[in-house]
Amino acid sequence: MLRFLTLLIVFLFPFQIADISAEDDGGGKLVYIIPVEREVERGLEAFLKRTTTEAIESGADHIILEIDTPGGRVDSAGQIATLLQNLEVPTTSFIINEALSAGSYIALNTDNIYFVPHATMGASGVINSDGTAAEEKAQSAWIEKMSSAAESKGRDPLYAVAMADPNIDLPEYGAPRGKFLTLSPNDAVEVGYAEGIVNDRVELLHELGLSKATVVETEPTLAEEVARFLTNPIVYSILLSVASLGLIVELYSPGFGVPGIMGLTALILFFYGHIVAGLAGMEAIILLLAGIILIVAELFVPGGILGLLGAGAIIGSLLMSGYDVGQMAFSIGIAFLIAIAASVILFRRVGLEKGIFRHIILRESTATELGYVSAKNRLDLIGLEGIALTPLRPSGTGEFNGERIDIVSEGGFIEKGKRIKVVKVEGVRVVVREI
Image 1: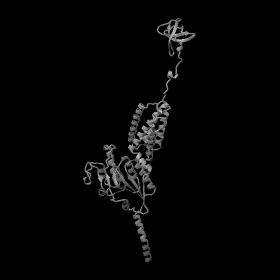
Image 2: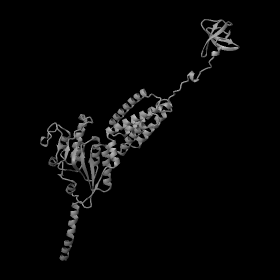
Image 3: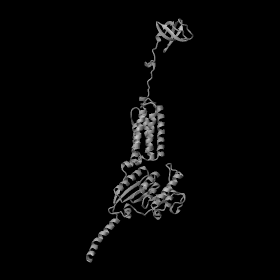
Image 4: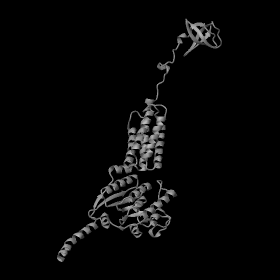
C-alpha cells in the first residue's frame, strides 16, 4: 500500500506543478490591450466604452490601457474614470510615453500602473482652451477628483493633488511651490504610484503573471478615427462655418452647384462624427430634418413664422449634438456671423436677381409702355365740345356727342347748361373749360 501511494505521488506531483506554473503564467486567461492615445476627448471616450464592453462580453481576465496622451478634456476624462471604476475586471495602466493632465487622471483610476523607463506622469492643472488657467471653482473640483482617484486605489492622495495644485511644495521630486508635479518612473515607484518599471509589453505581462495569456489588441475603427477628428471643437466649428457659408452662397447662385454641395457635405460630416461618437441621436436628426422642411415651406408660405421655427429647430438639433453646450453655442455664433457677413456682401454685389430668390420675388412691373393700363385712356375726348349737365364745383357731369362723362372744371365754378370744351385728359380725369 505504501509503495502504491509513493508511485501515485511521483506520477501526480509533476502535473500539479505544471498546473500551478500554468496558472502563474496566465495560461488560459484572456488579456485585452486598449490604446489610449492622442488627446482625451469624446471620441476616445466612445472608443473605450466600446472596447471595454467587448472585453467584458468576451470574458477578459485583465484589461491593460497603453497610455500615451498629453491630456485633453476634463469632462471626457471624468466619464472614462467612471467607466473604469465600474469595471469588475482588474485594470492596469501601462504608460509608454506620457500620461499628462487628463491622462494622469485616467491612470489613477486603474488598479496598477507601470512605466517604461522614459515615461512621465503628472502636470495635471486645468487649462482653458485659450491657454489660461481655469477658474478657481473648476480647479478645486479637479483637484478633488485627482485626490479621490488616488485614494480609491490605495495611493497617497498628496502626490495626485500636487499634480493639479502648484501650491503643494515637493522640491525633492522637482516640484517646488508654484510648479505642478510630474513623476518620473523611479519617483512613481518610490511614492507608490507605480508597481514597477518595464521595458515593453512582454515584461509587463510577465510582471502581471500573464505571460502565457491570450492577448487581444484593440484598435479604433476607421469610423471612430474619423469621429475623433470631426468632434474636435476646432474642426466642427470650421464645419459649421463652411456649412453656413456654402448654403448662403447657394441662395444667390443659379441652380445647385459647388457652394451648396460644400455646405451640405460639411453639415453631413458634422452629424456623422457626432453620431458615431454617440453624441447625436435620432432625435437630433429628426429635429434637423423638421427644421429644413419648415424653412423650405417658408419660401411658399408668407409670414415668417415657419422660417423662425425652422431656424430654431436646426439650432436646437446642433445644441443637442454637442457634448459641451457652451462650446457648441460659440461655434454656432461664429457660423451665424459668417452667414450674415456673406449675405450682406452677396446682396450688395449680386442682389436678388439670381439664385433661388428669382423664383419667389416678383420682378415684373405693370408699366404703361409694356401694355398694362388700369383704365381706358380717353385721349379722343380732347377738343370735343358739350354741355354741363350739372354745376361744376369744380367736378360734375357733362354730355359730349350724347355720352355722359364725369368731368372737372379747369378752375372756377361753371353753371349747369353752359357750353364746355375738353382741354385735357389725365388718365380717368377729364378737364373742361367753359366756352
